[in-house]
Length: 112
Image (tube, rainbow, N blue to C red; front, side, top):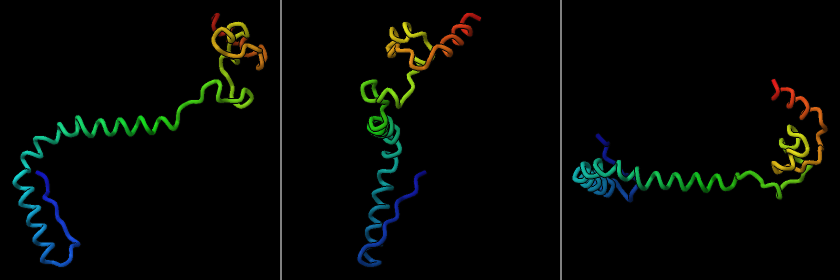
């Protein structure tokens, strides 16, 4: 069961009582309809609203593309873990900026 709303803060106590009584009467008259419609309301309206909110919130925190970052600021793991030729084919710079020790160790690990 849903608790009827209580309204207050109007001009005086008489108006509070009048509006609260009217709201309770309307609520009791339409309570069954509201309870029946509530699942559909949440399935359609609330779910879409929450999904739109999440999509909008995530647009702010998108990962930068390769063109948006300075090469010295971030480590490209393709360049770090792959040999230079493979890193270039995978989309890295392929310039061997991190040396050849880590790709050599990765090769040993992959061979095991």
